[in-house]
Length: 128
Image (cartoon, rainbow, N blue to C red; front, side, top):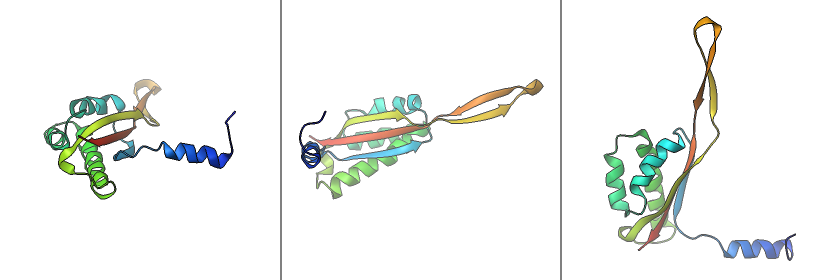
């Protein structure tokens, strides 16, 4: 059972709000495993290096993650008034989103399932 009045609980929850700049893309049409290959390459790096890595990475997930990273940089600049040259990627992760299930007809009346996996990609920045 929660302690205190509902407004008091909300006030305490809002005091602990995360103020780090971040960006998130929901229902990205890339599997979590494939997105994590790219996210592992940029985790902990400064944003200029990460953008360079993403620009020359041949994977499809890198284009999606590049857009999310640019959005997080813009959020840090416009909303939090942070210096872009001092930013680095503190957290980046991909969570599983709903899977689209499709059926492919095969020989002799059989049907194979095709799973079109999606993910939620989050990038959190911080200042050094």
